[in-house]
Each structure stands twice: as C-alpha cells, then as structure tokens.
Image 1 (cartoon, rainbow, N blue to C red):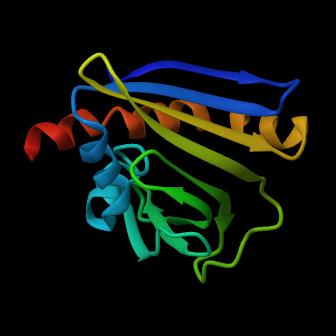
Image 2 (image 1 turned 90 degrees about the vertical axis):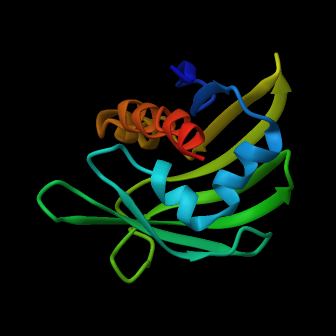
Length: 162
C-alpha cells in the first residue's frame, strides 16, 4: 500500500497523510500537474473525479466534482497559493456547490503537498490545516481519512498502467 501513515492532531488542527511510491519525484508530480491523471486518483474509487479547471500555479484554481455511485455530484475547488515544481504545492481546499462557489457550511483546509526523493522512489507528505478543532473534527466525521487513503492508494495502479 502506498499510504504509510495517516494521523490527525487536534492541538495543531492538522490532518497528515504520508505515502511512498516506487517512481521518481518528477513522475509523481506529473500526476497532480496533469488534470487527466489527477482525476484518476482524486477521490475514492467509488467517487471518480472530473477535473473541470486546472491551473496549478500561484493564484490559479483547480475545480472538480466527484460523482457518487448513485450519480450525485460533490464539487470542490483549490485556490493555489504556492508552487515549487516538482517539490511542492500549496492551496486552500474548499468544498463547493456545482457552480464552484465555496460552501460556507463546510470547512476549508490550507494544504501543503511535498514530494521528496526517498529510497529510490518518492515520499509524498500531505498536511491539511483547519481553522478550528471543530472544522477538523467535521471532516474526520465525514470520512476524510478513509476517502483520502483510498484515493491516494490508486496512484500505484496509475503508475503501473503508464
């Protein structure tokens, strides 16, 4: 399994996911930089993603929706705040309506994703910070750990297919 650690820290209001892939940093970076590859791994297998807009640069925006087994769509958006290709990127991660307006009733995370060479492959560390303990608890209760783990674990299949 690519995901090697997932933990949350209520004191720092963070959710951290760590994964390891048997591919170079540049290859893993490309998955996030290419919208067609991103949609193969963004969202758990039973909620495939469709990336609508993809501008992975500071000030850019990525919009997407995931389609559930019953056809219901769940939208989200990233406001990209920093990019250091191929080492890291940062963004504000929000739930949205289907017009990609942020949903004020759901938490926004400030997320930083880093890619580091590690043992012949790549270590990816994803840290999401929430405004409050309640906001973090809300996404935990929504199944964020399970969903993020299932989504990230799809990267090995994508790598094997390329």
